[in-house]
Image 1: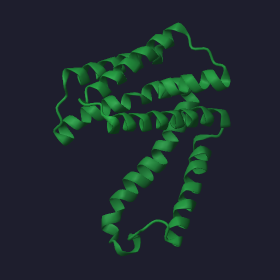
Image 2: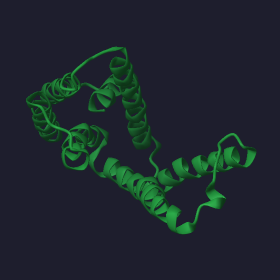
Image 3: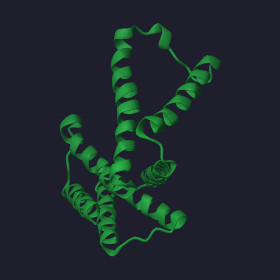
Length: 185
């Protein structure tokens, strides 16, 4: 994502990328390449998945810069994202476009999802991200956000029993170092 923010900022807002930040972004990119290469085979499905992730990164980078440009406070930006999404989902459920068993599942089974995905991911993370962009700026937030693949790889070790190869460990180290350098640049 830091590469996406830098690219969009350069193309749309004509923001310069300083040498120190450029070197840090290059280190992050090298780390991501190692993380992808460490997955083993790079067939069409893997490359297609990587392409989807890059597209998502561009979308997230656009959201990050747009959020800063909008000048909304964290609550306003969270409402701007959340309420239309809730309305669209409600409409799709009411018209049958989306299959749901929401009314037939006991509340005790739904409650953990409401708390984690609804409040945690939907509200708290949106508020925290908007506040971070307002205080740290989009470039720093994007750099710190690039730790997500490295953290996911580290989390896969105890949670899924996956092995971390030396290539993946090298990728994690490069991404982490690049994030540190980008945040200081």
